[in-house]
Image (cartoon, rainbow, N blue to C red; front, side, top):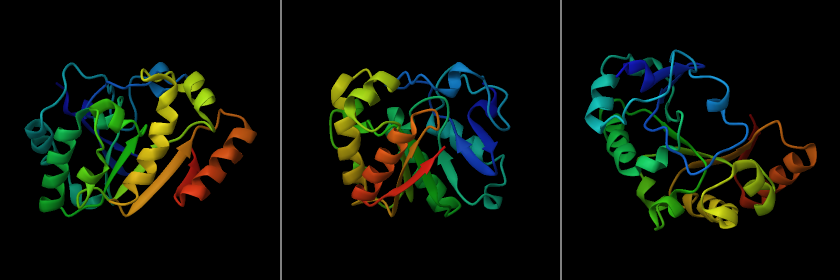
Length: 198
């Protein structure tokens, strides 16, 4: 497996692509438009890397030059939460770098349990793709396999993860309506988390 499909440089950040699996089929997903991002020619994985494979791959990079390490690729990183946390523990112990997860916020539905507390002490930032202003619009745009309950689960995850992770933010895609963007911004303010349009 090409290492640059697992670890890649993107806008000056060091990114880790753990999986191509995702519980959503978002209409705007970058997978619909390109195979690669940043220094990765292709983020399509032949197989999912083990924690040891990622750790060995990190040794080939000058990790010290990056401000943070980001779990984000062509799938939902919390699909492989156990592997993610094992790698995060290594990164903290070896490089002491801030770690961010970019997520759709459905880890609890994926795993059938509350997962936010497992991030404590390892993850510095969680960025949740809110993407729409209510359950119906989210369902129509992101097509989550868990159906209409996904939006409320994502909001609950944001509330929970704030208890364990220092920095929490939400984001939306710029292709949604201005009205939806404003409503999402207000929701982020209510939740007392960051907000950006990506």
